Image 1 (spheres, rainbow, N blue to C red):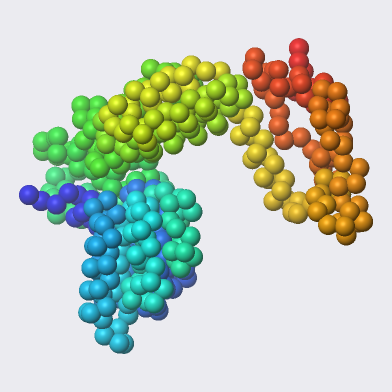
Image 2: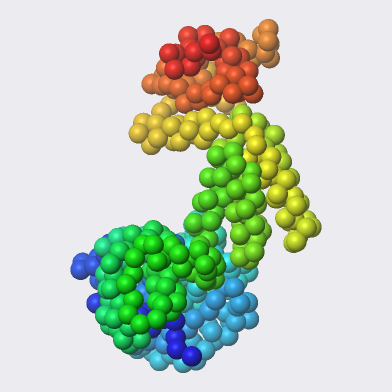
Length: 429
């Protein structure tokens, strides 16, 4: 049985490598490291099919150093220690450290990641990790601090077109089929910047035809509809489907949301990943329009953790239907992003003196906490006083959206703060 097209076309050198010019182009940081032969440990973060594994293999070939591979899905602590022991025994004094490539490093447990620390720190191995998830959340801080982080981007249109032409003109199998790339829009759209997905789709379409092949958008769409899972090998539609899932909840379509969740379940998606996305959606998209949505989403997440699969799907479905049918508000989401933008722009503005804590006599003498009014001592548990830094007295971050639930919160703020909360875009009429 012949190798898949994506494997047959896997680049062996940087000259054949497509995309990521910001990392491997002339003068770029990884290119310099490779050319000098001095590689430090690093983690490659990016979506599927953008060349993470290929780049690691190219580096190993270029440096002619031992190359060990572990998959975080199938390897345990013992496997990590076995590889480290092999690396120690097989290395000579003047040689570069062997490279240990760990695919999907975000799936390694804390103990597995801990078992790597000493070897990476002492240079027993040079670690190259690959992840599709944000390393800040998934990789332990001590290991992350010992590695550089490089972000890989989805391939751009020109990169994907170049890859298609290389496939039909240089691949030993495809070049015998006399393939004409008459239209490529559908191929590019379905690939989503994923080179492996692009080549899988191309191979699927070509294999379904006899004789010479003329690739058109219509042909691609027809073939994919007939084989809805064929181009989704090993969960490569992960990002497309989760995007459709979240947008269906946001768009108040419970049927579509359940459909896309069913696709994820049938595709073997991690239930915790689905549950996390539901919690995020509850906070980001439903928000203050229905605060109970976040409570229910968290309860569903907790249920999945307690009872597992497949029964956990019922709790997730309940949460999904509730979120999709709830009123929507993103005021909290917009508010924190606006506040973060102002903080980055204005820096560390001083806290007003009356809001500062005064645990010592010196602080009291300096005026810390002087003049602070305790709201519970006033009617309605509110009194008008300054809480913002002096430079931001008129700044607004939360802009209430006028759904029934949030309208009550908004009107309370108008009653408390008066003109500060009354503006032309937020009329209560």
